[in-house]
Image 1 (cartoon, rainbow, N blue to C red):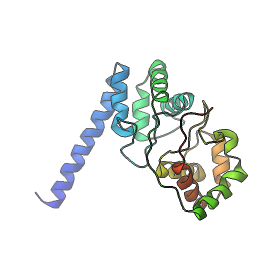
Image 2: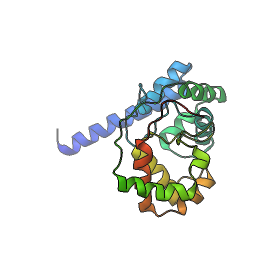
Image 3: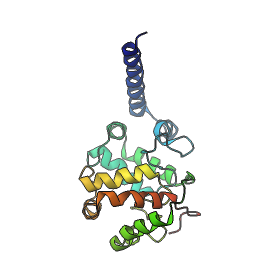
Image 4: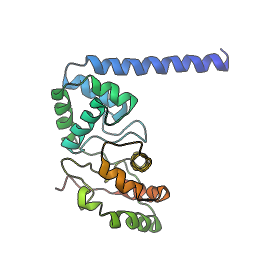
Length: 202
């Protein structure tokens, strides 16, 4: 098989897999079916398969519910998530959000950044008063996400998307992130991703 043929074959397999994933989401009938679909990207033990995919195990319930709804109605856009959410009923979304909120947050064992990176992170976080919404330990609350221990690359991508106006489902975050130099976001992501909290302090 030539190099071009091999690439075409692999592309075909990936396309078929993607279609199967979305179709499975569209026909899932039980919570177990739905969580199997979610595990395809978010991991069957809470560790996502890609660095830019968020941890949802242990994430705050109403935040998860709101994001599913935003994907469904088009306020937040992602090719895979928009397709999956389109097939979900309100009951499906509520059951998924409740289920994942009750799961233990996985320890991704992301390293503590050097002192200078932590200083740079606090130079952004403190003036913006990020704890005012995301709470003292960055554990979030019912409607705001936990940031502590989230995937480094996902955090960076999310903040960058708000900064560039590519994610628009929360105007407050758009305003805050646009006030920060893009280069200053990387230390913030590194610091937040390294944080560990024992449970869900509220």
